[in-house]
Image (cartoon, rainbow, N blue to C red; front, side, top):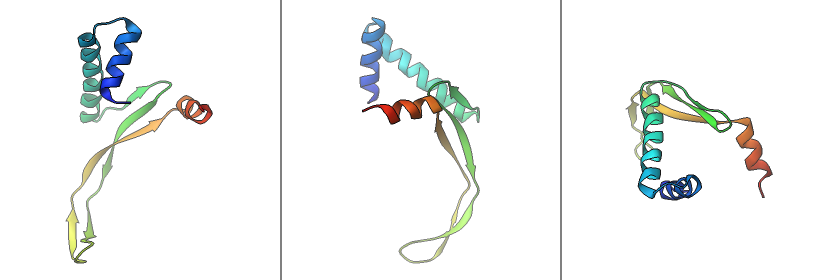
Length: 93
């Protein structure tokens, strides 16, 4: 499902005009992004949770030349799906 398809489904299901559905989806994902950017955990019960994982810097190797390169520390979003979502996906045919 794409963002556009989500907007269409939301608009149709809630009986909204498309622009309202678009605004709701924009705000929804914007708030999740802002929370993660502020290192907050996001939990949507029945769907899953997201948080930021911190990766330390390390010395790696350039795969072409074998030269050592420094990899900087970074923060990455991490999603863990809920038990309910796992069951829905597993039993859906």
